[in-house]
Amino acid sequence: MTSIKHETVIANARIVLADRVIERGWVAFADGRIAELGEGHAPAGSEDAAGDLIMPGLIELHTDHLEAHYVPRPKVFWDPIAAVVSYDGQLATSGITTVLDSLRVWREDGAEEVDGRAGVLAEAIASAREANLLRADHFLHLRCEIPMPSVVEEARELIGRPDVRLMSLMDHTPGQRQFRDEVKLRDYYRGKGAGMTDAELDVLFARRFTYQKTYAATNMRAIVALAQQYEIPLASHDDTTEENVADAISDRVSVAEFPTTIEAARGLHQAGIGILMGAPNVVRGGSHSGNIAAIDLAREGLLDILSSDYIPSSLLMAALQLPERVPAIDLASAVRTVTKTPAEAVGLADRGEIAVGKRADVIRVHVAHNVPAVRSVWREGQRVA
Image (cartoon, rainbow, N blue to C red):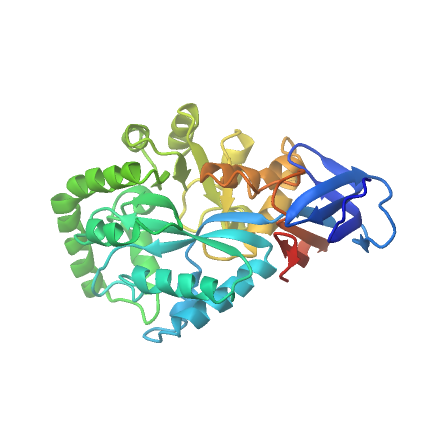
């Protein structure tokens, strides 16, 4: 070890690097970066990790969990900044140090109460950041529901923000993609809040068919053009068919979120598009919508990135379970799906791995009874949880 002055040294740890695991090692931070790391004994005065895992902070590309903090009950809107702070705390204690907050960029009367609130939440995130209220590093992921009449206008209002890092192309028209089985979509809305009746759903679905026919093609071209103009990476969503894959390739998509079939996943992989699947899908052993299981894609080498989607703690759980479920995936490879690979997908090359010169976004994880607990979180070398 050199004479560099270190702010923090963590020793006696299993350190997960991008390509291997140091079974007993140490890592040092200085000036917000990884300064040194090594195997064996560390200098006196280091923090003893007692054999726990030391990993890069997790990188989350798609989570709409902020919505649950902002609208915790039907028709109950929480203070948006307070909602962001509460949500941020849950992310940090789940090991997530960088997050792309997924905001719905559309309005649809009579569907879900968080529709049309992207601007409010984007401002709340910015205000919380400026007031130094946040533990994790927050960026924006604009979820664009392509058939909606207002989606292009709303996207234009947000896309110039410096924290926008990803845009996704979504189409939840009944009978296709995630909800090829219309019954599944009906079940989804019946279970939301007070639920919707079949008559109300008939009206909703008819309106969505009309929107899809009237606006989808034009809106798709406009949103893709906006992303390319502002050099924002694009994600496709719920790719199902060969036609969906062809569209993703044509639109120069870099990440495919939640493909629903093995055929679509293979086509996307062959095209060099990174495949993102839900961590809850891994933990639960399958899709809640009845689509392809993430583990099945992992066994075929078709899983690149995991996302916690709607439950932050699932991200770490899924990464640590992958080697048990798929023996061909070692721990370092599994951890890359929630660190280095998602970071690179959105141009955040300064983080996502424990390597000299990278940001000291680091977590300490204790595992017991196959359940991980995040003991400590550092962001840029500063303890935040």
